[in-house]
Amino acid sequence: MLDAHYLVWLVVFLALAFDYINGFHDTANAIATSVSTRAIEPKKAIMMTAALNFLGAMVSTGVAKTIGGDI
Image (cartoon, rainbow, N blue to C red; front, top):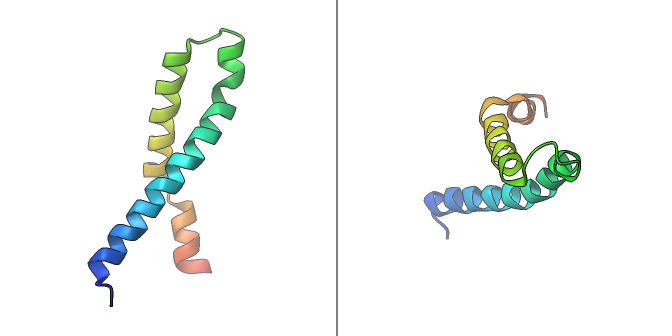
């Protein structure tokens, strides 16, 4: 039977994989207009979006609280 330690690592890996896949879809949607109109350089837009996606994941706890308590 799997040890709890391995299950934790599996969940962390799956969460990171989901975030990676979700990130490259949402990032493209978020910066497409700014880059296509040349309001911001692509490299700067990607760096800004990556930083803000990370910040949003670290600061926002609304989903975790809902799943942890209300469901």
